[in-house]
Amino acid sequence: MAMKSSSRGSLSASGDAAPVPPLKLVLRVGTPQGPDDPFEAYLADGRRGRAVIEELLPDDWSFDGRRVLDFGCGAGRTLRQFLPEAAAGELWGCDIDAESIDWLRSHLEPPLHCFRSDATPPLPINDGYFDLIWAMSVFTHIGDLWSQWLAEMHRILAPNGLLIASFLGPGVFQAVAGEEYIEDRIGTHIRPGRVVFHSEWWLREHWGRAFDILKVRKPGPSSGRSAEVAHRHLLACRRAEPVTPKALEGLDPGEPRERAAEQTNERLLRGEPARALARERKAQNRPTMRARRALLRSPLGTWLRALRRRRRPEPN
Image (cartoon, rainbow, N blue to C red; front, side):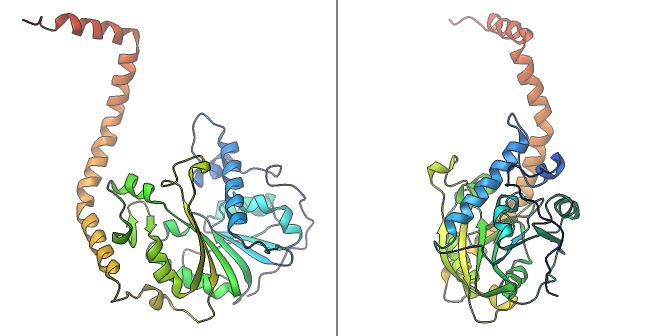
C-alpha cells in the first residue's frame, strides 16, 4: 500500500526544542549513562547523525517535495533533527520497537510520519516510494537477513534513489573480537549480541550489486573520538537492475578475499566458547575486584598497605 500523510496540524519545533522521549527509550538506542546528562547526549547524537547525512548528500540535494525514510528510527534520535525539513518534504520513520513508534506518533506526528515494521521484510510501502533512506546503526545489527533487507531498500527506493548506511570501524572489531583488524581477511562477520561487521571491499562487492557506492565517510580526529573506533558511513545510489537476496549473497570465485573472510569467520567461531568463558569469569570476578579497589582507597586500605610494608623481610 502507499503511505499517506496525516491531516492533523503540524508541530513547528526544531529538533532540540521538541519533546524528548523518556529515559528508557533514550537508553534503548545506546546513549550511555554516566556523568553527562543522558538526554543531552541523546540530542547530541542526533545532531551528529544529521551532520553526517548532510555531509554525505550531494550539494544540490533538497528535501523539498522529497519522500525520506529513517529505517530503524527508534524514538526519532536522528529523525527529530529534520523537523524543519518536514514542512517541505515527507519524512517517515519505522522501527520494530512498538513503544518507540507509539511515542513518536503521540509527540512528533505530524509533521513526522511513523509506522512499526516487522522483523522481516517486506515493508508496507509501494515500489519506488522513497527518494532517500538512511539506516544509522541498523545493518550493524542485522545478521542472516541482511540480503533480504538490502533488497527491500532497493525495492522501495525510486530510480536513482539514495541510501545512507553506517558500518563499524576497524577499532570496534579489535575491541570486540580481540585481535587486529586486517581488511583483506574480513568480509562480513557476526559477533555474539548481534553485532555485525562489514569491510569496505565486501560492501562494494556485495552491496555494489544493488547500489553504486558513491562515497565512504571515514571520520578523522576532529570527530572527538578515535577515527578507527567510530562508525563509518556510505552513500549509495540505487542501480536500475532488479536484485534478489540470492544474487547479493553469491560469492565471487575469482575474489581471494572471500575465502580469507570465510576462514576468519571459521577461526573466530571455533574460539568463541573460550572467549565466552573468559567473559563470564571476568563478569563474575568484577564485584570482587570493585570491592578490593574500594577497600584500598579507604582509610583502612592505607593502614593495610603500611602493615604489608612492615611485614616485608629486610634485604640481606
